[in-house]
Length: 88
Image 1 (cartoon, rainbow, N blue to C red):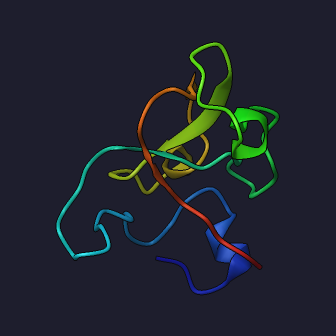
Image 2 (cartoon, rainbow, N blue to C red):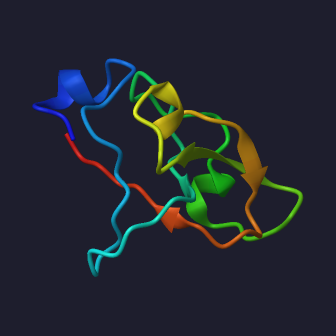
């Protein structure tokens, strides 16, 4: 996907993160809570504690390799989505 943190947060990745934990192919929106540069977005479902439709979190698209893989639109936190979580 990326060689290092700098490559992960430079606005694109080498390959879409399009497999689930079982290895099955997926193409869906995922919770990220981050912007394309890896910084924390202001929309993050109240630090991932809210599941209400009036609170929002940033999503990415598992089929994309451009900046939209992590920093897309905001969605209501009531929606069920997989989560991308990275630690530097």
